[in-house]
Image 1 (tube, rainbow, N blue to C red):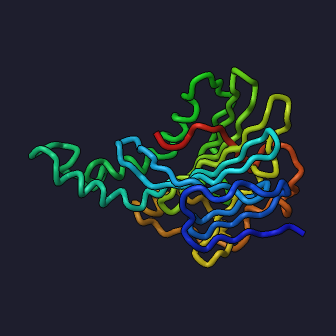
Image 2: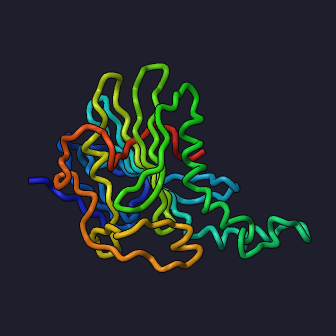
Image 3: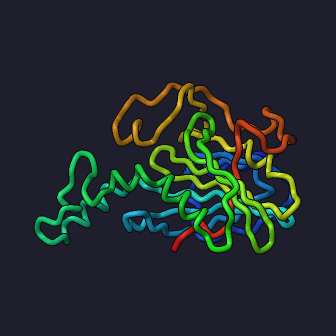
Length: 253
């Protein structure tokens, strides 16, 4: 039987390292996601420098399985509007970025949120000694984002990633495997979303963070469940449909 780890409180700084190598369903209500990890992940707090230089809080959940590395980085953009307002207080009189507009937001905070997925993708593929293998549109339980596959030119390791945004949080879901290893299918297929009660979310049409948060379009209806590797055939390798994964080095600067 698959164990389930449920986290209700705020996880801060480094938690204990992974103590088991058995895969288990990990659920984090605070950051709104669920995914299969090879044991209890280490949790580390970070500060993420956004495209327009806002310093945003985040957490990295990571675990190793032999030579394989798995990580979920979550960056919280919910406070960025207030950061833009605070920034405007120290702007030179009449400075255009701090005047604000309905389109851009004060300090360009709206543009920053709109570009968050692309910015995180660019950071990943511009890492030193990295070759881009694939960059496509993707969705995970109807939350849209980017699918990225890169190869480390030094050691041949491959990274499979999904980068998306849900409810003003940026998610970078990465799985890195050594050269010659199969894609991290169990990790890839297990990503899902949970609400504040820990119930699974699977939308019935595409969720877009800009439209459904910034522009206030009605959020698509959804059902429970989703993101369950066991239900989807955890052993399958890569392929179309649902993927996740990623590389190291996409954390705070």
